[in-house]
Length: 474
Image (cartoon, rainbow, N blue to C red; front, top):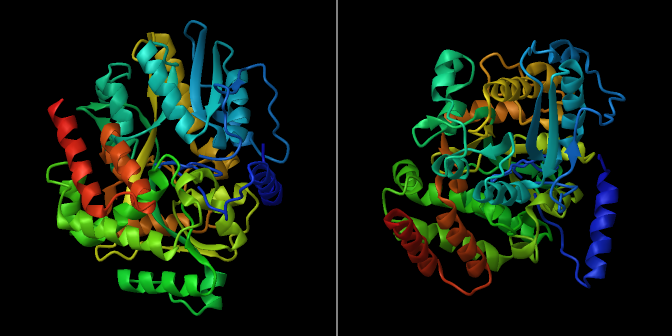
């Protein structure tokens, strides 16, 4: 599955030539790895290479797994979970960006537990959102599925398809097993809606060599950030690598503009939908975004570009910055990009707070007792210290467990500093987890419309607030 950066760039150029138009390079996420990916953001998100467009690739107990060059000794030692229930078949939907490590680890688990067989299907960041929603509506959910917290996970609680772990968590002492921040973000609708698998914070990754070349200091205020963008643009470097497809990557920058204009208290009220988005702070933030679009601070054609590819322009040096989570260390390394000239800084809003979100595994509420036991055991194995040690770049480290191993700075040099900074400066919930999907979609649509000079910031603020009121009144 692993591909070199050069191969991916060639593939992108070929695809662009066939379409008779080649984007200048953009992309990335949440997770997602090769993005994460996130995510999102993403959000979170969260995406990556090897997108699954056919409904998912499956991995079962009989599949071959390539362990060449990887020490899985410690993972194998903890793979036998002592399951003595009835034979069970489990299905798991997960991210394509993490397939390489998951294939091997799932085979190890299945081999060690002959009465459990886990089959994994893989999707890209937005593909898994669509697949899960379709399955929820048709009553065909898998045994367990990857998801994010906030409104994305809330959907499966509201629609009665996710297992409620509230009582289970008390019985198994989750309060002392998982970190408080992660547990808070997977507690939705009054219930613990899944097992947290990562806790993520976002910052601004940047090319230190480009900053040094043009004598740009790391910005500590929004004015300094604006000045850095202007200087980069003057010297032929696109300041920020971003991509508008599906909305969540561009959103990561807009929410920081809102944090700057609104301040902590008002931004928290906006995120909780307890005050109107049709306000000066939101209009000012969207006006700053409009200016960035007009000044060419984003790649040409970014509105229709894939977030899964923002790392490409960043890696090539045509873009100097990319707003990403701590998984970006792994995204770049998985695509054979050196981290020698790469560092990060918290977005320089006045508060310094960082956007944060959780990832989790949710479980089908109709699982039998044996199926639930086996599914939890598999998740605990897949997200154990031992498994993460074998494939560290396929996890959003550190694991959200109280007994999590420290992050290896030699493998992920920026991660611990990002986590520590978020603890010091504070966080806010990433917008596409704070928003219900109906409201997030309106934000995403108006981001595009502002970039294309079709709508004004004032019109966008009114439309977002109207979407909130429609959601609250339905």
